[in-house]
Length: 402
Image (cartoon, rainbow, N blue to C red; front, top):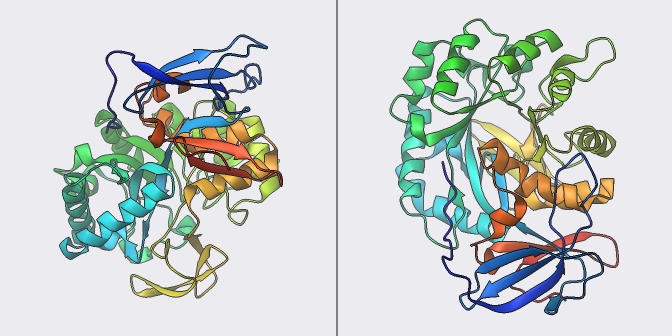
């Protein structure tokens, strides 16, 4: 599903911003310090994005090397403000719209609302409610892209917090039962490709233009390699609910790294994946790593005890666990992951790109960072600056720096 953004047909520059950096996810560091100049027209729309020559002192507001980026895109978020996307009912629509406004305030332009394994009637009802919410999109609200179905074709041994009662073996019949009539409203499906019947399901999903991700899977390196060759293009919450990167049994992470074109969804909370492993992963594959929040229903609420279907979620320090200790997700905003990854790695440009550029590329965006900014309101871009304490912080592009 496309990102909606206006485009200015004629440049009418009335303001210049100079000495700006653009984030990049490139393996090559050449150009990461390149400076740019932005032209902004009378409507506040970016109508020029020009590279500056080294040492140039072009006129305009000097941003002193701050980064500018599009807003964030979250490919894995399960709910918020007490709502769990798989449990959506028509009466939840007002609160869903409120959640979309919270996400916009938190710097997120678009999400793939994630539906974890659930009963078929609940899944189809949630898809219908999301469809109604899309029709009510307006400025100041996060955009609902196609849904992310995380399940039900998952390996039981790797199901994590997914309810075993609603898991299913992959088949075209089971797929149609769940998505028939909603094919154009689904962007991403997570499944275990080693399961019998998965190959036909992967082919059917790819025919619909749906991205397929390996997750909650017991796949070996060889099985993962075959899945990638068949069209699987991503790992869901890399390192979690799959084999680790072991020296004698490298698993799907190694297979993805060796291919170089499989996206790696990373939860950068420091709990799901240790900071050192997150940094190592991005240094090995900066063009593949994308940040996801994996936020659950308590996102935007206080910590403590919360309901999740018939179970209880315990929320502490931004982490969500079931009562038996199973790690279920987080309540941290997506852009908090950027701040943490930048702190761990010392590479803020790549951390920014992981939440703003790479997710768009997974969904088919082929424009360069400068082209993504061109034609968009300055107020809908993000300005990033490292403070005196070294922490990376963001604000709207139209807001003055402190």
